Image (cartoon, rainbow, N blue to C red):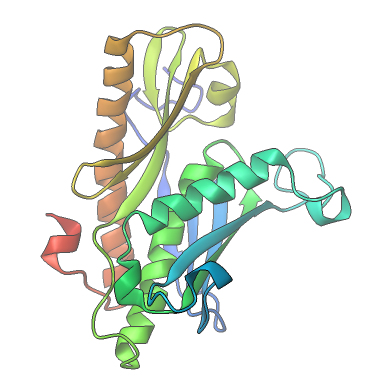
Length: 250
């Protein structure tokens, strides 16, 4: 039995709330056990210089961990010598994951910025940020459609992410911090709702792992991601935002 009494293939208790920010075009707060990440989506009618005149839009992300998101207070990164390599890597992952499911040409020459702030960290903050950011993005895009600034949602599919790992020679889904910090193998899996991989980040922290073990971890991640896709759709439906079948692939 795991430290929080879950089965190996069980996600942590999940909650996804949307619309809590009255100013942002989209917002979502996700709780995965004791991990809580707040994401907002902001629309700007301009694109980076390298996209000007191309007719293509841009989706990007920023990620930050608030000072008391962990057991001890962290200094805000802007007060140090710039953001850390870890933060840069995570926010690039979030941006790549969302762009993979966007039709940037259909978005037009506008940018959507996803700001992901970790309120409380107990493992899996980057995966939670991707899952919540996709919901915040849909809320923002739905607003553009409602205002007739877009004809339809420029979205190809859902996107979500989950962690999986090998702990004490057992494959576990959705690692909390205690499990993550002692894992032999740690992996983050990003997938779309057509069961296609967007990105896999995996490494042997304390040991190597076989192809068979890798396949078992990805299979387990796919099972958990199916549950996350349902959670995303339910959260949006609670605000009367419904997705076309070709996006959800139900």
